[in-house]
Length: 269
Picture 1 (cartoon, rainbow, N blue to C red):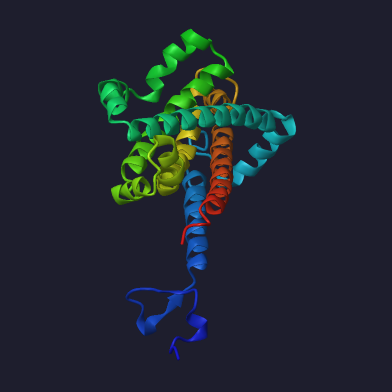
Picture 2: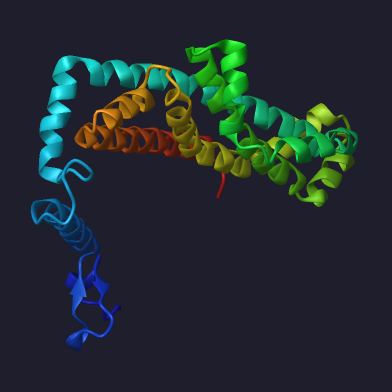
């Protein structure tokens, strides 16, 4: 029989506090958030920094409501989601496919080795001039930048996952007569490497949002463009509104992905 007191469940002991005093982790998180918001509010209210450069949290709801009632907020969200989803799907799909192909073929890995070493260090923003030349200032340009941003993450995570498959599993497949690469891919490689591949896709979810903002700062309609407009007018409260909007959207997308991933991997022990 456990000696743990029922009230101590779900609580964390605070080091150095007499009597082993324990605090609920959720309560600690709420207290921390309130302290942060209070400090932020004080910075502006006490004149330590002008509200033009750092708006107090109390001004954000009003700015948010103005954006919502004007219709701008929803319009920019829909435009950014379009760039985000198209670029995410395109970049992730190409990265995963090339990662699988390269991971299963030493010949292809050798042929692409120096090409990848040359292209990989180039940051996504460096492709903006070409995106504008090729697609003009258009949604296609934003999609291209987002796709480049997530491609490498998915490529390297997939390559590592495929090359990390236990060689004993490959030999076991051979002993059962599964000698073709396609059969090995379906029966062995994909099931064994799926967790690593999905880890790369999840990392790309956040990178894609950063790429969306970068792409839209150059004039493509969306959250990034709206933030740039607001910053130009010194409307920093609106900038914060869209920063929080992106955080919320990313949180929702990530939570949905985790749910889908758990369904895909439910066969694993």
